[in-house]
Image (cartoon, rainbow, N blue to C red):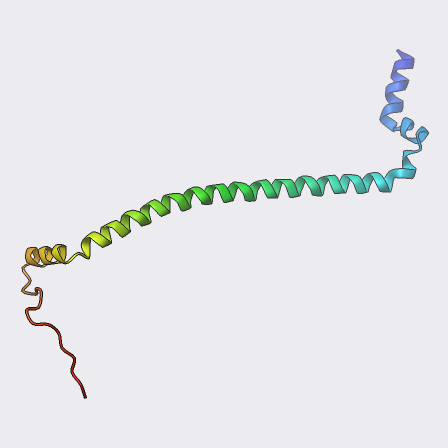
Length: 106
């Protein structure tokens, strides 16, 4: 148990890293770790943005259908026969003019 415990203790202290002379490459290792973290963060933000784009595409599609329905309703309500019927139902005396319009000149 003494030898195994010493190996574990050596690993905990990092003696094997000193034997490999990792401390000479420590700035490079830290630089690679920093680049890795930045890469992961950029990927995360890109994925988040793509998710927003997909959600907004779905919203735009539903709004296109709503817009088409509203346009159909407006076109239906702008027909002369529909307007006349609505005016009659409201009890208005306004109707189609019997004489054509004319322009007043100076």
